[in-house]
Amino acid sequence: MARKKKRNPQLSPKIKVVTSKTENQKNYIRGVIENDIIFCSGPAGSGKSYIAAGIACEHLYRGDIEKVIITRPLICTGKDIGSLPGELQEKINPYLVPMRENLKHFLGSMNYNKYYSEDRIAFEPLEMMRGRTFHDTYMILDEAQNCTFDQIKMFVTRMGQNSKVLINGDLKQTDLTRGRSGLESCMHKLKNIDGVAVCELDHSDIQRNDLIAKVLRVLEE
Image (cartoon, rainbow, N blue to C red; front, side, top):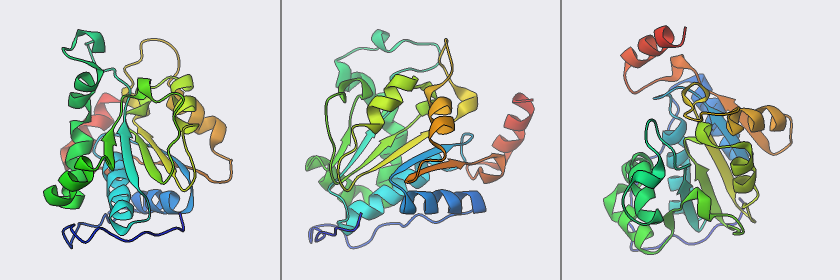
């Protein structure tokens, strides 16, 4: 990620910069900086998606990369994606609202809208990414606990030059009905590969609300 381009002068001069609140989050940020493929697992509210969005926004704003792509598997609790109205892009939009809000939080509405209008921030259906290559891009796969092994394998191999792949998920909240989560398998198989970081957050990293950690500890017993 050494190449740097000029920042667009029409952008707002300030963005929010992500900072770690815990030691595990600090290790996660370090893992993103020092590696090109990063897996992160952890409970809801621990900062997986928030930190990924913050680092991606900072690098996009600085001109280190050309684009940020966000995707996730089209599966949710209790409802099949085919039952939602609209075309595929319309179906995926409700699923990506949390990451859209994260991006706006760091960039501000003005910068976000400009990048989005220039297609430098894009929300892509995971099912439509096969055969593509993404250069100069932060590729973020969210909710990856609901991905199969083959889906994650396909996503990782879309990575081009000067790109990073960030794959996040909560292994204890998978909605897959059959088989092992692909996220768990990939984290296990790739943990000792140079250039790949495997990071784990836990209940102590939850910043959303202190009560969440207490609830999860009881529910996961």
